Amino acid sequence: MDCGGKNKSKFLASRNNKIYMDLKLIIREHALQFLPAKSLFKFRGVCRDWRLMISTPFFAHNQSLSYSSVSGMFFQSHGDPPTFISTDPESCGVPDPTLSFLPSPIDIVASSNGLLCCQAKTGDRAYYICNPVTKQWKKLPKPSMEHGPEPAAVLIFKPSLLNFVAEYKLICAFRSNDFDDATEFEIYSSKDDAWKVSGEINFSAKKLIAKSGVCVNDVVYWQSSHGSILVYDMTKDRSQVIHGCYSGHGTLGEFNGKLCSASVNGRTLTVNVISNIYSNTMHMGSRAQLWTDKIRIPLVTEMFNVSSYDHFPVLYAGSEIALVLSGRSIYRCDLKTTEVRFLVALPRPEQKWIPYVNSLVAL
Image (cartoon, rainbow, N blue to C red):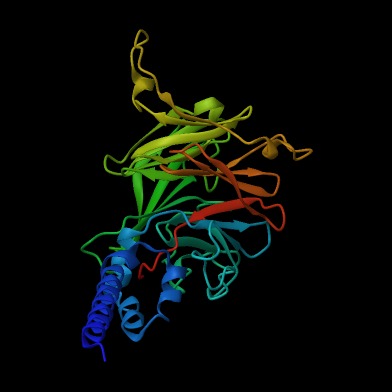
């Protein structure tokens, strides 16, 4: 018997096993937390160690800190329960897209880093905050003010290294009951578990568009039906109205830490970034510009072959991608490579959409 060959085989087997175990440890300790929730549920079947680790609050906390990519969109037609369309059905998804685990039928009004804000369609029209992956939810106390049939609500959740339970705020801009054509603000804080009406009143803002709001660096922005943008600085408790980009028809988002507005003009996706929010107050001779062109991406020809469609709404705009709707087809635009590709087709025309991040964040 060739003892040298036998020893060599044992050595190779031992080395390969060590490499496998080291690779498994690296993936477990460093790579898994960067994956979306649906993928992680699949990885729980790899072995008992992985299943136990992925099920711990510490891992869920790290995943909510590490994973922030948009995983898909919640769509909802008038009167229907919501549905979820994933950007990658193999890796991103939710177990109950209709959110039937909530105590009553709802409308989704806002989202932020894995959390959804929903409002009951009937009764006292209560607000609920939920994680559709874990099915955890919380009913918020009743607001002090009436927010209207379609609240201009913005949910703000920033994952924090020190907070294992999510701390979030819900900001609602609403028409004042005391002053004609004025807008007021009411803010819910999960830390205080209470609503607070701001002392700020804006007399310039017109009718706000529901689900148009975004928050960038503690400043909240809403589009109005007249093309302007209402700005509310949460830190200073001050508001102002600024000009929208391209008559305010773009979709608001965050691009590398700044407010952006994305729209399709002709056959080009244009992403504009706000450069100086105070240019409205500059003197007449100032050359300061409010918006600057950041990215222009030519769209693919197939997007314009849909008959009877001449409007291409931008569903989402961020630092890496934008999602554009053509008919019932969603296209993914890579803002770094400028690649445009078909993503998924909607089963039916939809009226409302909310971007969503597939996170394990705990409530």
